[in-house]
Length: 344
Image 1 (cartoon, rainbow, N blue to C red):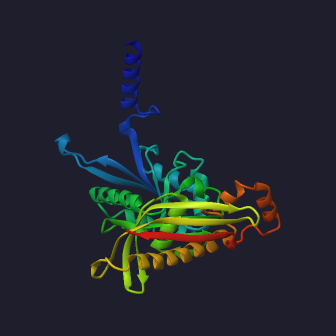
Image 2: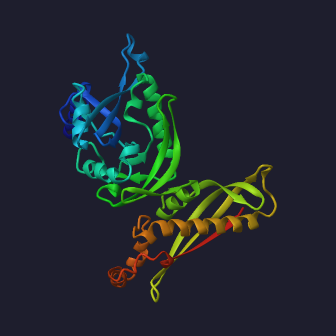
Image 3: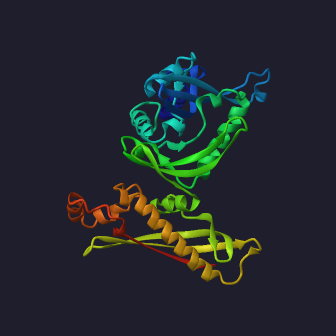
């Protein structure tokens, strides 16, 4: 009983005061953080949720408000945004970082490095690129922005590939999935995925390449895609995927075999009932070539972004280190791909 009373007292204290001693009414609980950069410095937008004033508390509607700021550094821009309101910004529930067009590439490493050591960032928060500008957040009403916030969360959840803050902090390369956002229309959907090497966008990946990257990292097990085949465009679902890694220690190569099942094969005429396995073999060959391409674009460029080299290092770290010292480690031919698909 004594412990129960103590626990109740602690819960009441948290509810009335907040975890840091700040009353909840004095906080702006940030749901989304937006950053952008140009030659004049950084722009920051903090999106937080509140309830609109109403005579009947039961009729109060959630609204998303914004705090905007700018400065020479990320820290300055965040401080300027926070100073625009008497509320204290609270980032404990912030799980989404959006990088504007100028904050992608070299600038994103700086932003993520800062946030990884600041209360405004959370190591596991999802990072997406957008073409939205800082001023685009202003015209909408609070209710419209709240609806957009829900759309952003849904689009982030539907993205095939998810990037995390800690993986971009201090990096020299990175994979950045993008969202297509229209603040005025209140819409947000998953976009393409961009590969950055240094400060430059080295490749733009379509849905198929993005899906393969997510499959390689184990982020997804099922995905719906479309392929151009000998019988025209075909849509399919790739399910129950299994990626096996078999290191060959005599040559230090990695045999990567992706296997799975194809379901719901359809074309312009609807469900396909004949020649399904032949289609599966054709699609498998296309996926193999895409896997080789993204291997050349990442591992072949000296960046093991999809962690393929991990499997070789785990078997013979000394030999891999020797190859790296000799400048022969990042060879895309070191990863040999095979895709096996069975049509259902």
